[in-house]
Image (cartoon, rainbow, N blue to C red; front, side, top):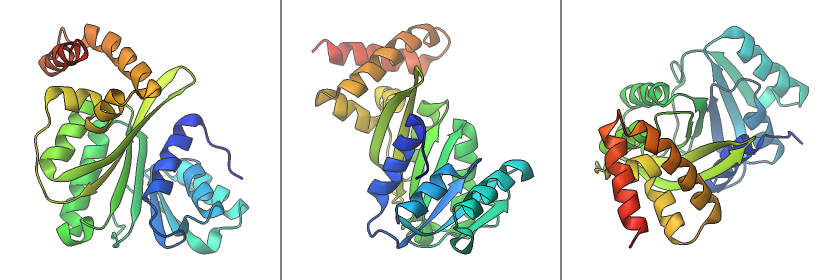
Length: 231
């Protein structure tokens, strides 16, 4: 079975939780690199088929080689393309966009909305794992009409990561600065005593103490978090 890092295991678990019927979904991994997620999804029967996309030929070839070696060449496709360009989405798709910057993720989502239309996007689940700019991603999602189904965190080789599972509903909302910076679902998990989230928030608090000097949104979020934790 394909072994995953703790970060990718977290992403994979979000995919598993998004699968309503094992084997029925088409899973698209954007920026798949070695194709690890795609291989694991096929190994465990979560997907009926997978698509991997890469903007460069070399990493696309690595994904294709991994899928072929695992015996999944007949139920997989690999595209050398920018994000989801040239990949029409289908109802029930589960799309993974992990390990890239938040602004890149926003660009891919914006183009997907434009290219596919609301009626398709309403039936697609997105698993997002930004490497940075989480607050910008969350604000974009809420203001554009995405709804947060779940958020998870992990610490992989002493680095914290978070992963969001969202669906498009066309209902635009506004997050507080605290929700944007800490995560609306993670805040609920923190209130329920989730130790892993508590460790993540402790890490964020230290990080935000520095970043608040040049970022008014983070400053506001940190002040709101301190106030709520003192209640």
